[in-house]
Image 1 (cartoon, helix red, strand yellow):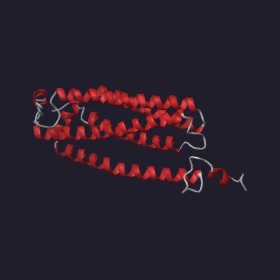
Image 2: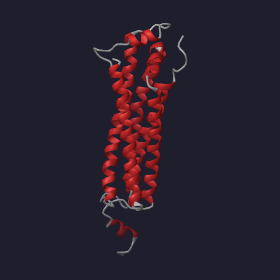
Image 3: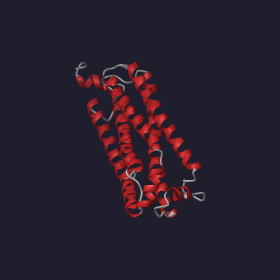
Image 4: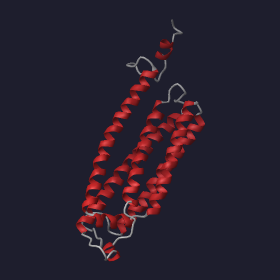
Length: 233
C-alpha cells in the first residue's frame, strides 16, 4: 500500500494536510487567485468608470491633461510590461519542465522589467512635479491654459484629471511593487530548487497576478495617453 499514488503524495513536503492530493491543492489555489483577481477587477473598474464619466463631463480639461503626458514614456513602459509578461509565461513553462536555472533567469528578468517600469514611471511623475501638475496647494495649469488658448480650461476640473491620473497609475505602481516583491521571493525559492514539475503552483499563481497587472496597464495606456490626441479646437 505504501507505493500507491495517495501515499506517495502524502509524503510530498509541498502538500498541505487539508488537501487530499497535489491536484486538489493546485485547483484550490487557482480558484483562490481567480476570486482575488475578480475583486481587483471590481476595484479598478470603479476607477475606470469614474474616469470615463468625468472625461465626458469635462472633455476639454481631460483632453489637455492627456496631451500633457509623455506618450513616448508611456509607450516604452507598455513595451516593457509586454516583455515582462513574456518572461513570466516562459518562466511558468520552465518550471513545468523542471529547468531550474532557466526559471531563475526568467524570474530575474521579470524583476528587472518591473523595476524598469517603475523607474520610468518615477521619471514621469517627477516631471509632473516640476510642472506643478500634482493636485494640492501648489497645483498650477497656467502652462496648459497658455498652450491651448482656443479652449476653456477650468483649473478645478483639470485637477480632477490629474487626481485620477495619479490615483490610477499610483495604484497600478503599488501592484507592480508587490509583484516585484513576490517574484523576488519566488526567485530565492527557485534557486533553492523548491519548485519541480510536480509542484510549481506559486509560479503559476504569481504569473496570473502579473498578467492581470499588465492587462490593467493595457487599459490605462490608451485611456490616459491616447484617447484625446486629436487636435483641440
